[in-house]
Image (cartoon, rainbow, N blue to C red):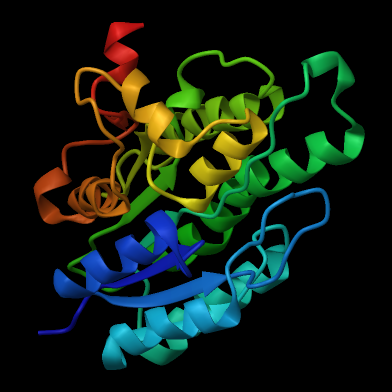
Length: 263
């Protein structure tokens, strides 16, 4: 039986890498893409080429890796087309690429900071969908069309001194809802996951921005009372990509340990 094929952005580490591993275990082939370079104004190191290569190695012959910047429509088109050329089709896309910067009230946010965050965290999701959806639409039956974006608990609430990130993640939720309506009748679903404090480089950057330790976030993540692991977010993403989630579209799945339910 042919394996379904997914495109995953932000795939070199964190939630993206965990999603690639989970999809492969579930019987998918994956094109795993990441920028593998640092971005000016982002104060922490992004994933390395070695990290992306390790994701590919772990997936065996079921994972193809590519460098791609989600700010570039051309590079995303190339990645989506590579899925079709290498694996024969494209069935799903997971937009997991994202960056974080905080500690500045909205009125002090520079144009550069605003544009960097929104270009990657929101426009990157839009461009991923724009590259992937046309190729999913022409996939041969049986079609398992899925689009899943990684938003955040910050996409459902307001958080201090994080305006660009909060705005972008709210925008991701609006995007998947609108896309779900546009896809009516196609059999393709569009959803988001909203992770809470997850053990990733973004959480470490958030902790550094507020002069704290990542474990301090666990105390606020009630009722779970601990950090979310990337594999737990990946499990939700992969369920949304599965046949079992065929009736789920235009919605957001919180993976936040119940944090937002207490706010």
